[in-house]
Image (cartoon, rainbow, N blue to C red):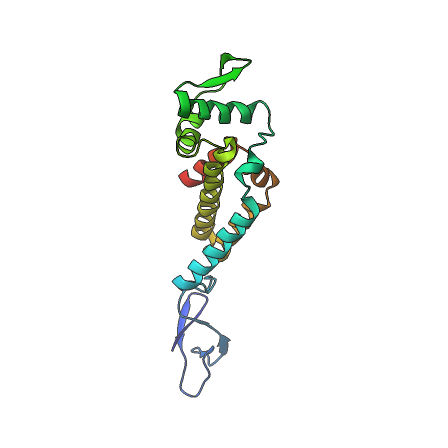
Length: 193
C-alpha cells in the first residue's frame, strides 16, 4: 500500500499495519493514504449529491413563502410598482400603475418586471403574489451557486458552509419573501462567479 507523509511517499512493509511507514532511518511515521491529504473525504458522487439535496431542501424550507403571503406587497412603493407593473405588462402591455382610474408610469426601469415577473403573470394572473415564484427560484439558484463556489474553493464541506452562510444572512432570507430585485440580483452575481 502506498502512503504519504507530507510530500514523501512510502510503502508499508510486510508485517507493518497500514498507516505506519518506515523511512531510510527506520523511523515509524504516521501516514495518510495516497491521495490528497487535505480532501474532506467526500469525493463519492452519491455523498455529494445527497449533501447538495439536503442543503437545497434546507433552503426551500427557510426561503419559501406562499403567493398569498407575498401578495401583501409589504415594501411600499417598490414591490407594488414591480408587481403591479409586471401584471399590467402581462395583461395590457403597458408598464405602470393605475391609481383612481388614472395611469401613472413607474419610476423603475421595466426590465425586472418585464423579464422576470410578467411571464408568471401571463400564466397565472389571478394572484398578484404569484410574482414571488421567480424570486423564490432565484433564491434557490443563489444557494446552488454558493454551494458550488464553496465546493470549488474548499471541497464539499466548504460548499455546505457557503450555502449555510448565505442562509444565515437575514437580508437574504427576508428579501427572498418579497417581490423585489435584491435576491435575484444577488443570485445572478453568484452565478457569474
